[in-house]
Structures are given as C-alpha cells and as structure tokens.
Image (cartoon, rainbow, N blue to C red; front, side, top):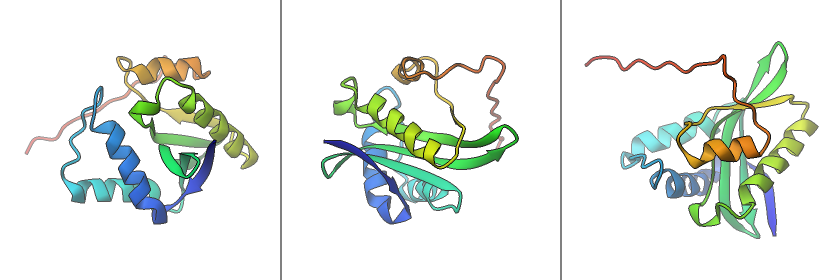
Length: 149
C-alpha cells in the first residue's frame, strides 16, 4: 500500500539511494560518481532548518523522494521542490500522481499555499506536472552562468 512520510537527514541513505537510482539514468543521466559532491548536495537539500522532504513508500519500500524547502513569501508560504522523483520502474502507474496529491494534502495542513518547482520542458516530467494541475509560469525564466576557470 502506498503512503508518504516526512523524512529528515537521518534518512539520508534512503534518500540518496532513491535519488541516484532515478537521476543517474535516462533521461537525466546525471553523473553523481563524486560521492562527496553527492553527500553535500543531499545535505544542502535535506539538512537545513527550512528543509521539507517527503518519501513515498510501497509498504516499507522507498520508491519516491521529494526534497525541497519552505519559503515564506508575500503571497503565502510555499513548498519549493528542488528534486522530485519516483523510481523508474514505478513510473507511469499512478505512484507519482498519488505522491503529489498526498504532498499537497500534507502541506495544506501545514498552512502552505503553493508548490513551486522547475523542470526541463523536453523530459517526461514536464507533462507529468501539467497532468497533475501545475501551470507553466510563462513570465519566469531561468538564467545560469558558468564561471571561467
């Protein structure tokens, strides 16, 4: 049976396992072979006082992770999702939609007003979020600048 629960830095091993099992494969292919960098990244997302992390479980087996933080904004308090994933073999069967819906219920009970996240427009996650009621913010753009060595 699917269920969610709040996770913390104490659950770092579970979080890291699910995260790397998804994002080191297609379509992401992220190279997390630098375990020190991975450890610091997970700490950044999960180990802060404002971090908010959820796990999706099928019975006792972790199958999904949502890592983000609480942001106090003038329009209300938001949940900013930095990373959201469901294990690849469980995608396309409703687990992700269940996970998002349960997160919405949980944060609403906490008084939060909105979920905000970023994703690439050329990956399956884009349509997943649209299907689950997320609206594209067409006036927002993301900028990045790599610094020369």
